[in-house]
Amino acid sequence: MGDFTTDFDSIRYERVKADKYGYIRVENKLYSTSPRFAKCMVLAKISFDRVDILTEEYELIVQHPRLYGKEPKSVIWQPYLILMAKRPTAIKYTSFYEQLPIEWQVYLSNCTVPEKQEALQLLSVILKNDDMKIPTQALQLASENGHPAVDSIKQIYYQLMNGRGQRDTIQPKGFVPAVPTATRGLAHYNEFFKGTGGHH
Image (tube, rainbow, N blue to C red; front, top):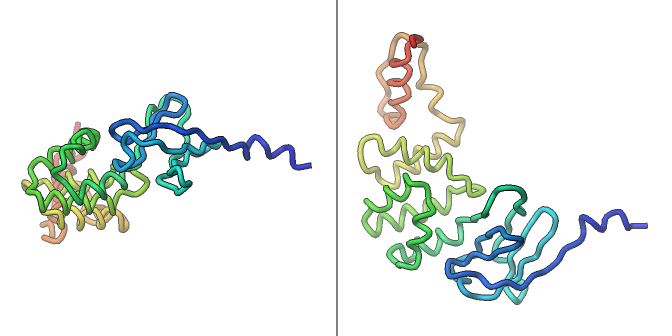
C-alpha cells in the first residue's frame, strides 16, 4: 500500500560542521544557523522542500526552504539579529553587517551604540520571512530628512504594512495638496507625481 508516499517522506540527516559565521553547506548550498553554532557540529534534516537545522540533541535551531536552482544561500536573519542586538559592537558580527542591504549598513554605521541596539532589535521583529524589502523601504522613507530615530522607521514600517498608507497621499495629477504632518515621511511620493505630471 503506502509506497507512493516514499519520495516525499524520505528524510535524511547529515552531520555538518558550521563555518566561522555559522553557515553550513548542504549540496553546495549555504544555509545559516546562528552565530552560537559557529564552528560547531549540527544536524541537517533534509527533506524534499526543507532543510531543518538541529542541534546534536535534535533541538530545532532554524528551518529553511530547501534551495534548488541558482540561489546560492538561504539566510534566516532573526537568530543573528537577536544576538547582534545584544552585543552590537561585537566584531564577530561584522561579516553579517556586510550582508545586510546597503541602506541598513549605512544607517547602522551612523547609529550610536544604544541606537544600533534598538535598530537591530526592531529589524529582528519586523523582518517577516526574511524579506528585507519593506523594512528597507521604511528606512529609506524615514531617512528623507536626515538620520531617523528608530521609532520613525518603526512607525513608517507599520504604515506601509497596514494597508500601505501612502496611497491616501497620492492625489490626482496636477495639484499637490499640503501634506499633513503625520505622513511627512511620504511627502516625496507627492513630489514624484507632481514631477511626472503626465509629461515625458
